[in-house]
Length: 271
Image 1: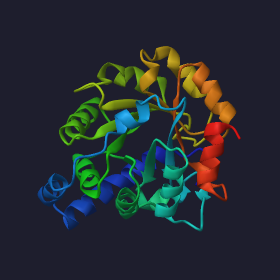
Image 2: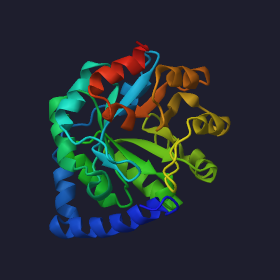
Image 3: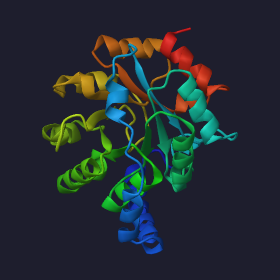
Image 4: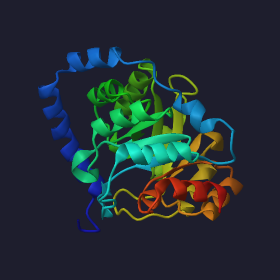
């Protein structure tokens, strides 16, 4: 994929087609009924903000990405999630986008059955249908990317997620997006929304850990911030912690290691 291409715009365009196809296969009302029949979600907000350890890591399960291509040929979503759970993860993030990340809602459902932690649906959610779909698959929180959504769309999805008792990880990269969503953090109810700051520019796919530190100046409450992407070492965690950020989402670094669970333990403990 050309480095200057707007990858996010391409993904969102494809996602609209994908959602339309999914709705033809399983109509909205049927998906709503499926969502209503699932157990109460696990509390992702509490799991990630609970001060049990100095650092809280949302450990990600993903096979591939647009920037890196195939990350892990020997991919076993459940085994990886179990290794994360055994080595200190606060929650699991599961990529469910098929075309660009080789993910699946089936992976999420299987992980939810196998581990006791909250499981995040990480995808490009642009339509209410996908929120019902996430709930039906067993997701506990959903990711909403501000750069993918108009303000009215974002508010509608925040309300729907809360109605379904799902936590939202509301992700931003651009300063403009942060300023746009800042008034809505905690909407419609407190303790349902976390703010994700993505250190990866979704237009160029380059990462810079300093991005979180720069954006913090515009965040009123660092306790709800999750720094995403570009975190590889315990020193990175300590650097973020000095600025008041103790919650991170880590994927590619862990997925590239021979033993992702051991890599998570080393990241958390520094040894």
